[in-house]
Image (cartoon, rainbow, N blue to C red):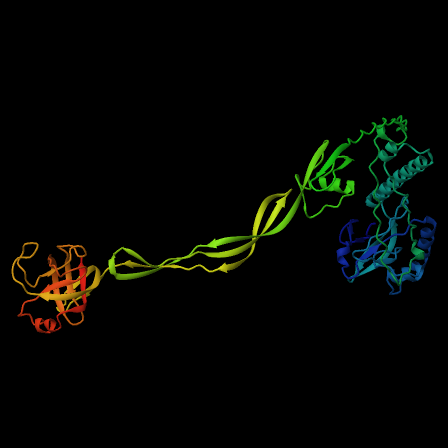
Length: 481
């Protein structure tokens, strides 16, 4: 809609358009309600008469117009009431009406205030073409909607199409309702409510000419396909299975493909804990079969067994090193052990120890073993020996050559060669006497077995004491290494 124009007296007949920015406080929209030509002409004539009668009064044009129409007017126009439009409100589209030439008013300015002048008709070329373009677009839109709705109604009245054709037809929206235009007289000037927002009408895409609903003919229904007859079921194979028991009668049963556990159920047989089939319970029967089922039996068997004796070793230095001498012989013990024996079909397959009972204890063997030794004499000299022996001892001091041909002195002893071989090197001593190292180099008719005869010189400090006794039973000889 167009804004009214204000006449600048300094310019010759040029009309200056007043924009809405000059009235930012109210956002005034000036509308000329000239849709009803007769009503506008009548208002216009009444306005001219009153303006001529009240020409000299101080009321401005807006006040005169307000008395005529009963509505508030702007200072620019004389026939259009004011409407306050909210910034975000949209006008409801109305049925377009071809506008008639509007009336404009020339305004002269005197002392800064505009003075209304005689209104003159507005030139047609000065009127903006925007409302006409909008009206034409609305007319075209309504015509297109009517055509689409008509086609939709015709399609609804036609007989039902096959499912394939109906799916391809476009779905047309319902005919939109056209809101009625609110005339200026019906509007409430005091309560200027925002007009409802314009509802956007979404139209479907036009149907191409070659695929329009009128040109598409319903397809003929397809000939129903006769289903092929189902193949005859293949007979389930049957198998004869014989259960061969070790300790009971055999069972023969005819079954389909199944496991051994299912065969038991089909034959009505409850497995026993003693059953031992040759195959597992998940074995699948796929042909005529013969399955052996053994029987398990468990018995306690007692067996007497020998307990080997042990040994007790005693280390001594009275026998040659490494030599073993038995003190007491060993004797085996006896134990009765009980086993749980598993028999499958009468044959022992496993034996598990259960418990035992000892009926005779074993006696260990005791023996001595020579390990040799060592000692240190009074002079601090250490000697190692193979073994030692306690023997009786006497003395003699005859001078001359010994049996081995060396001179007799305090370095030799006389021995029985059958017990102490000649040339044996020994150390002779006991707790009271220490005769040192001697060599078995001489013999004598009175020397037998393990007796030794020690050569002593009368000048030896030990001679008087040893000779006073003459015979000693506790003398020790150490066989030196």
